[in-house]
Length: 183
Image 1 (cartoon, helix red, strand yellow):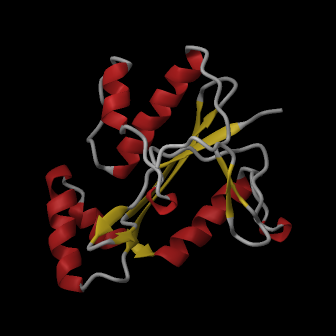
Image 2: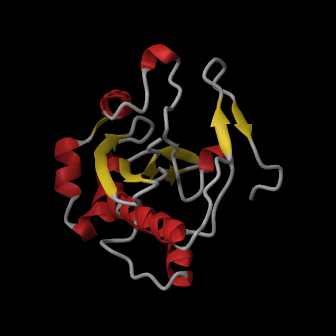
């Protein structure tokens, strides 16, 4: 059975609230370790003022030269989510009618602030594996690609990936499968 691993990059923190500014996903085949596809959208936040958004986007994305692209293409999160659902359904990993359960896929993130967990960080993992960064650190799609490279390397080195948490379709509750997870 073919398994694919979409790699997500978490959102940005603003005044104690998480606002997602990018929704980047890189899909790799966990068996062949090959790149399959990617999904990337800029997200227009709802809790920040327009002035704060302009300042933040210029500061975050201006140095990469993509601030204009963000302003021209950012869409509300619910639209991004619908496009993402269509994308994973196109890849036959998910069907809304089946309660939203994943089929032969798992998401990998570098920490999950929504679930109050965190990893040591992408840069630390890359240093430990002596891997150079590709692209720009903190540009979500580049970070997702680098995390995918770390996963590919770990799989090539014989690491066994295990599901650490599952969201229950019926209730939306998260069930953690390891007691000694990082908090």
